[in-house]
Length: 126
Image 1 (tube, rainbow, N blue to C red):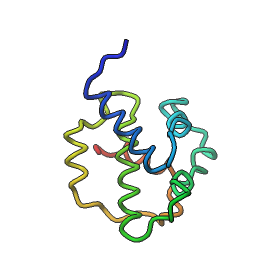
Image 2 (image 1 turned 60 degrees about the vertical axis):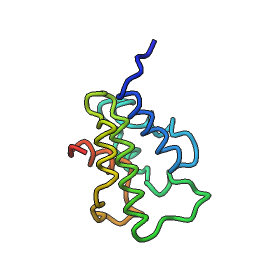
Image 3 (image 1 turned 90 degrees about the horizontal axis):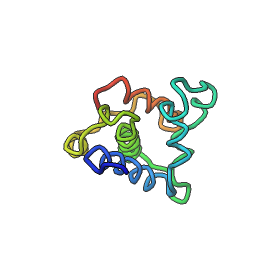
């Protein structure tokens, strides 16, 4: 039996956020994350998953500030999916992060990989 607590809630928030962004359940994306498959990703596979390719293809591609918001939300969702509950943000932290000003993109939107975003959250205290 799984204990329901805030760590489960924040994980569920991450799954739901990705589901909204992707337009379908993110199960295959989640299982491709390094902490789920193995400690180290196969670099060619990991680097080939572009963020733009996991977005809901039924919607027009994001433009301008919306690109910044999408990248931020995917990073936030990925931080909620960390394998160790201790490394996940609390819902209070998630709420505070949603209120913060979003930093500009460090890379062109259409070149951003899921690996890049995952690596970014593991370097920061998101």
